[in-house]
Amino acid sequence: MNKEEILAKSRKEYKNNDERELQVKDKSMTFSYIVMIAMAAVFTTIRAGQGLPMMDLCATVCGSVCAGMAYRFFRTKKTEYFILALITFIVMIVAIIRFAMGH
Image (cartoon, rainbow, N blue to C red; front, top):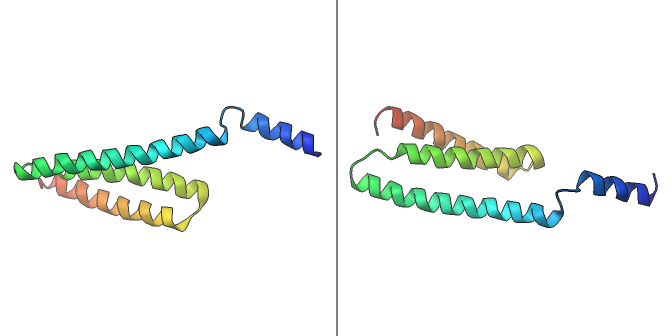
């Protein structure tokens, strides 16, 4: 396979996903996580102050972050993504159990 064939194949495979677009998507997901966590923290604080259960928000945020980190781990095989996915999964399970118990 010569240089031109490799280049043509690469262009065909990544026709709709150039590197800049992929970087923008990744940055947008990071920004989404930050906003989601900040909003959940505000609502959790308000609900806790009112004596309402807040574990559903914790489970939702942890589940979302866990899914993102698990996806990154399976695509990159980087250990740090596995560790983050595992930690957020455990916290999510604890939050679901506490929510089911009425906390």
